[in-house]
Image (cartoon, rainbow, N blue to C red):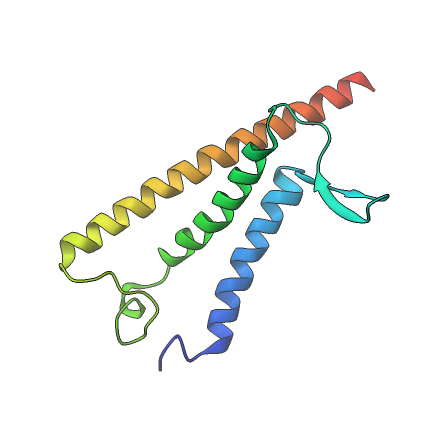
Length: 132
C-alpha cells in the first residue's frame, strides 16, 4: 500500500508538525498574544530584538524546517518515485547523502534560531518575575 494513498498517515504527519509549530510559537516562545482591542493575535509587546522581521523570519523558517525534519523521519522505502512522496532527482546515493547532510544542517540552523527565541522568552519571564 502506498503511503500517499493512506490519508490517515498523511494527516498524522501534517498534524504532528503543525502541533510542534504551534507549541513553539505559543508555549516555548510566548511569541503571540491576544489583542483584545483588535481581536486578533499580535507579536508580544515584551521583546528584546528590535526588529519585528526577526521574529517573523524565525517563525516562518521554523515552520518550514519542521516539515523538512519530519521528512527525514520517514523510512527511505517510502521516499521514492513509486510513492510520489519525495524524489531527489538522479544521481544515486551521492545525491541522497547530500540531501541528508543538507537536512541535518537545516535542522541545526532551526534549533539555533529556536534557542534564540526560547532564551529570550525565558529572560523576559525571569525579569518580569523578579520585577514583581
